[in-house]
Length: 243
Image 1 (tube, helix red, strand yellow):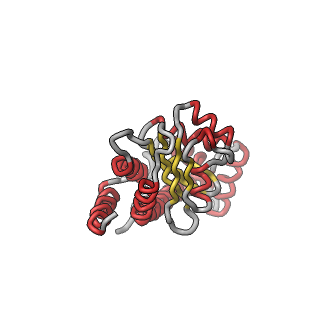
Image 2 (image 1 turned 135 degrees about the vertical axis):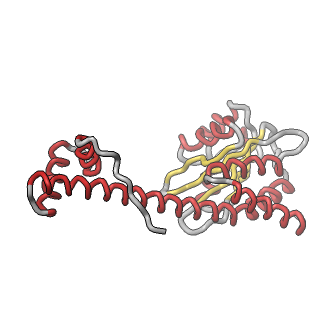
């Protein structure tokens, strides 16, 4: 991969991040770009991205349903080239699945689906995140040394963009959780105020009454608070945030 090609690729990946509102759309675009970069005239390879988080594996993006299904086969066995590439991390290459001895059941299953060779390349992500780019071909010995170098170079170039996208997703999740927590607090505070007025009691006693009702009915505190507010035909409470 030449210097000019690397610069162009980095710009393409940065553009994908800016144009993608969610990490799923970014990663799906990443797989399509990988297919474009790593396929040749003889065949369009299948591509998926495996992400390991909290010791659980999932395909977070794929170039097609066939690619998604192939990744799922591997997860059912809880081991295989793509999982191994993400966990270690190390490049895994199976030139011919019919001759593979490490994962015989998995290999036979994938061969039955028409696939003969697999290449899995790890991304270099931040601590706590592990992922691999999974490439599948119907042709044995499809992935030559040149293609392996190209795939490794692509994964290396994409790793920084991938890490940024994951970081942005975590920040978005944290912000969403904070907003939901504030909404819950607003609903509960409103219900507590209503109980104080109805029972002429203190705030502490009103909270105890609300918690007791939640425990007795086996309903979350926010849900029973929302039900109490709704009984009075009040509009759903709105939480205001100061900029």
